[in-house]
Image (cartoon, rainbow, N blue to C red; front, side, top):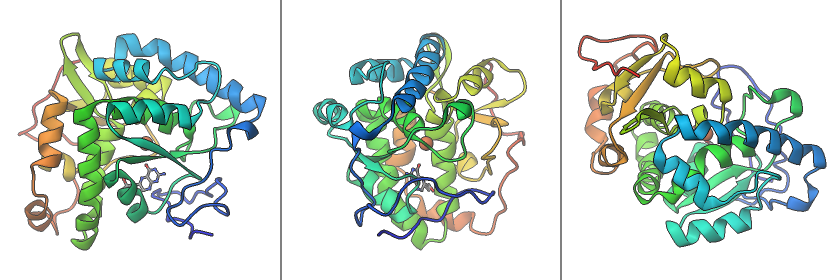
Amino acid sequence: MADLPDVPSAQPITLRGDYTQAASDYSVAQDWESYSAADHDVWRTLYARQIQLLENYAAPEFIAGARALNASSEHIPRVDDTNRVLDKLTGWQIVVVPGLIPETHFFAHLSARRFPVTRWIRNPDELDYLAEPDIFHDFFGHVPLLTNPVFARFMQAYGEAGPKAIAAGALHMLARLYWYMVEFGLIRTAQGLRVYGSGILSSKSETVYSLRDPKPHRIAFELERVMLTDYLIDDFQQTYFVIGSFDELFHAGYDTDFAPIYEKFADVPGIEPDCVLPTDRLIRS
Ligand code: HBI
Ligand code: FE
C-alpha cells in the first residue's frame, strides 16, 4: 500500500479514499461499475446545477472544454472515454486516485500530462461544501481546461516547477500560484469578467459570489503578488486575482525562472488574504 499523503489543510481531516489498492504512483482503477445509484444521483444533481451557470459565468475556453468532453449529465463519467477525447486534443490523460496524494507524486503526474482525479463522489448531504476534492470537483472543475493547449501547457510547467520549489523550501509560494490561478482564477473577456478556476466552478454559491458580490477584492494578476499572498481554505476567498488571457498565465508560469523569486522572498511573511496594496490594480466586475 502507498503511504498516506499529508493533508494540505489547517483542520485535521480524515482522508476518506481507499488507499489500500493504490499503485506506487497512487493510481487506482476507476471501477465504474461499483458506483451506486445514489452516487450517480449526486453527479446528476451537481452537474445540472453547475452546467447551467457556465453560460453566464464561465470563461469561453472552459465552456468549450466542457462541451468537448461531452460528459454525461446523467451519470459519473467513465474516465476511459474522457481520456480518448483528451488524448486527441492535448495529449493529457486522467489518472484515477483515491483522493489527495503527496505533492511529489502530484507534481510528477502533472509534468507527465496526467491529471489526478479522485475516484469517489461526495454524499447527498455535502452538495455545497467538502473539505477534500471528490470526482465532481476534480473532473467538472479541472478537466475542461485540460482541453485547452495553452492552459494545459501551464499545468505541465507547474508540475515541472514542483521539485525545484521543494528543493528551495518554497513550496508554499508555488502552491499559492496553484490556489489563486488554478483553483480560484478569474479572467477578463469580451463578455466581462468570467470564472475559470475549478474551485469556483465546482461550487454554485462561490461561482455567483466571485463575480457578483461587492465584498471580495478582484486584483489584476501579478506573479510575485500572487506568490506572496496567503489564502483561506475553508471559506469563500477574500481576494481573487484576474488574468487578461491564458497567454498571460502561461507566460508567467512557463517563461519565468521562479528561483530568484524564492530567494528574494524567502524570509518575507505572507500578505494577508484580504489586504489591498497601493500597487494593486483593482478590477471591476
Ligand atoms: N492531490 N489528488 C490531489 N489533488 C490535488 O489537487 C493535490 C494533491 N496533492 C497535493 C496538492 N494538490 C497541492 O498541495 C499541490 O498543488 C501543492
Ligand atoms: Fe482542485
